[in-house]
Amino acid sequence: DMENKVWLNDQWLADSLSAYLLGLGGLEGVKLITCFLFLLTFVIFPGYIFKKTSSNFYLSFFFVIFAKLSASIQFFFRPFLFGFFFLAILSFYLSEYYRLLIGKEPIVLPKKFLDLAIIRFLLIPLVFAFWVNCHPTFLLGLLILGLFSFLLLCFGRFSISLFLFFILSFLATLLNPFGLDLYLQIFELLGSTFFTNLNQEWKNLPFNLDSFCSIFIVA
Image: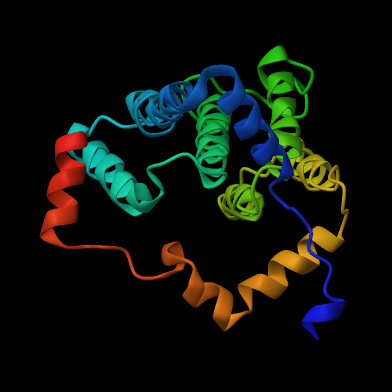
């Protein structure tokens, strides 16, 4: 019964920021912010991560192109943009954590748990506190963080600090006006055929020559 449904504005913070930016700089200012966020999300953060973790330029370039192609339908200013941005930040932090834990700068845990190099990762829950109020893609972030922790566990690299970050990140997602009801609404929408057919981003990626060439030129 739709009359008894209560609509939860799960993107209220992104909407407020958008209105503020529009009032501050007009449409040109919004365009500038959009370009800046996409530059950070698809060029600067991925470029830094690939530089630190991969020596194969062509493979890295392929994944950047694939990411841009996947996100091309969202190449304009809307709350989804914040989801991409926070996902890039999370990827950056996880790549740094992996590098510190396993790479060239190993840290023995929990002996050096209070090391500043680990404490700075407590910013991850702060990212989720903003993310949950901007777009429901925060669920994807939690999934990636949980999967990352699980894979470390499978390879014998279990880290109590990373588990703590996951718990704190989940608790941070409760810092929204709707609490756990937000989760219920998101899962209800994800299970709705009407909703998934209504939104273009839930459909197949536009893997055709025209789309690929345009994204390749932009890249």
